Length: 316
Image (cartoon, rainbow, N blue to C red):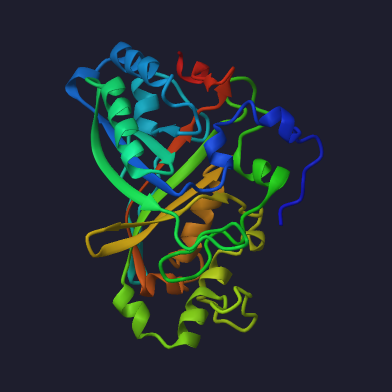
């Protein structure tokens, strides 16, 4: 677990600065809504007007908002550390990069309510922005630990840091007003091959993940390709801690995981992804044998100020 660094702000200080939905547990249901700019959004003022209308809805809890590198560039400003994800290919796998403009994580307990809230967000952003892609997700098999499970049955989020260590991992600090409390998020949609997974024997499944399904205990002698070993956050230099907020998704009979990870920078995600894809040592994460990413983008989630999005860094 990530140690608390000396001088890091206490929770009582930080919780007024970040979008609270990032720190809260995953909700019962959620929508991942991706927007793109339209022709009407071709100038900075139209974008600013739309973001101004969005601000009352994007309270950081019901709606967590993130801005892509292209949107920040369209405003003629800069967010230090924000850049598009690199596509990775080779070793028999491909990790795509599909840049996004504006991303909203719409959260709640009822999908009907989320539809209505999504429509309000859509109308607030029009005509400068239009919806490009929507994925509906849900929490699956909530356990006593407070974590949900992936559709393979394995607990998701076991290695998440907690408390102040989670804040240390997930949020920018020490960079000044307009940046402190912000977060970088990586979002990938993974499609599971559940037929391939179901063909595996129980011990093969466990060794793909690196944990036993029966008790969630890590398997010491699992292969180097086991997912847990590929992504052990403390095994990187420097350590690559991030706050996962992933949720399963399904559409008709296709299903998988919306992988969502928040960090004080993109370092932890990019470092872990390179190792998973075999870019570091040629060993590919076994997870690619039962799932694959079909898209991937990153966004900057602005901090909060007086209960509203703090958009000073982007000139609002």
